[in-house]
Each structure stands twice: as structure tokens, then as C-alpha cells.
Length: 275
Image 1 (tube, rainbow, N blue to C red):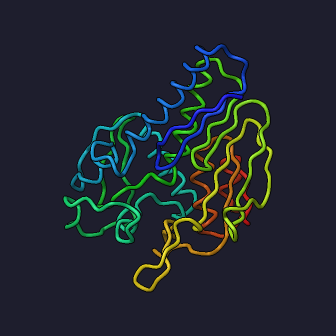
Image 2: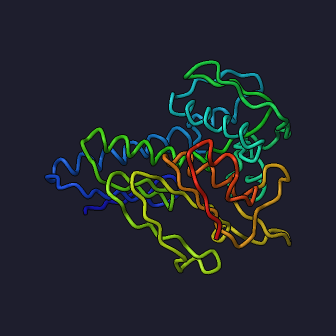
Image 3: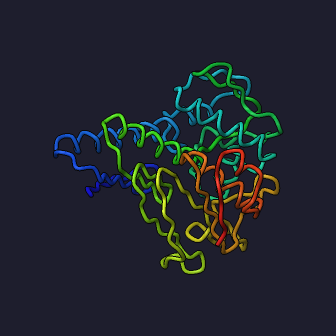
């Protein structure tokens, strides 16, 4: 097995390839996989002023913004899961994460008032989004999984049959089974269990690395959209799904609901467990 790693998506992304390939073929596959990862990061990063998401966040309510087809696909998936989960998955949480210092506060946005409301953005075409209200979007809870899926697609296009793409615990296995370790949320530097994945994706959400004391209150980067409160329990929420986009996004539904049998899992061919 050959492995390469690069920083991206706010973490270290590792691609491993198990196929018996010659060196040039293998290097081309690695390059294609990482190029797909970096492209999604460029398009959907909250931190990048030129990303589609940053341009949306700067836009005035009612504006029509041209976006890449990848961004439109992720926005469509986020909207659909928002509806199916009755709001337990919501990407309109960036303003709160900025307030808690989990995301940077762009000066040009600081004066805007919060008017999230119930109406989501609209996608009039495969390359446009219409802004409703004055919400700020953060795709951190779904785009990483999508980037992993795009990397897998790029590897397949290079003829790779057996591989794994791991973006900080959001991962997908292509081909033969691989053993994946799941952290113990009580002792996150130790492992609680092993999972065998073959042709599947897995993601875990937890507050153990993001939990902090802010002005006398415990916060985390996990937010319950209904209450606006941080999820700070010492549990982890893991989802196994056909694609990493759904595994990544559904962990937020399970974290907010506390229900490892939530109906959304069946809708997307997924399963979950809570530690």
C-alpha cells in the first residue's frame, strides 16, 4: 500500500492506494485525488474570500450568485437533508460559530443583522443560488465528505480499484475491506472500537477536540440548530453510509437528535452508532 498526505479542508488528508501500479501511474492517481480535494476546498471554504460560499455570505438578500456545479450539488444536498431532518441539519449556523470564535469574522459582514428565518436559499439552476434572508452559510459539516467522494471518483477515473481517502476521520474505502479505528470520546487519544469498511464511507462528529470555556460557558463547534446551544456531551456520533457526503452530514443529525435510529438514516442507506 502506498500513502500520501497533504493539508486541506482544515485537516490532514491521507490517500492510500493498494493497487499494484507502476510509479508514474500511482503518482498520477495521487495527484488527481488531491487536486479534487483542493478544488472543493477552494470552492466551499468559509475562510477563502474568493470561494463560492464567501461570495454568497457577502451578497445582499435577494442576490443571484453564480456558483460552481459542485457547490450547487452540495447546497442541494444540504437543503434536502435540512427538510428531511426537520431542521436538525442546517448550514446557516456560521454566524453563531463566528460569535464563538470557531470561524473568522470578516469585517465587511460584521454589521449585518441575523435574520435566519425559515426560508432556505433557492437554486434556480445548476450553477446559481439565490440568497434568502441575511444568513451566513458554513459547509464545514458536509463539504469535507463531498471532497472525499470527489477524490474517490478521481482515483477511479485513473483506474484505481482499491484505495482509501481519509480527511481527518471523514473517510471512504474503495474496493477491498479495510479496518478503521473509532476514538473513545472519553479518552480521544485512545481507540474504542474497530469497524470493517468495504465500498463504504464513515464519518464521526464529537466535541472532544473543539470543546472550550467561553465567558463561563462550555462551547463546541457542534451546534444544535433548534436551540442554538453547543453540543458538549462526551459522546461521539458515527455514521456509515454509501457516500462520505451523507456520512458527514448525517452525523450532525444524530448528534442533535441523540437518536442512532433516526429515520433519516434509512432514507440515505446509512447506519449509525453512538459511543
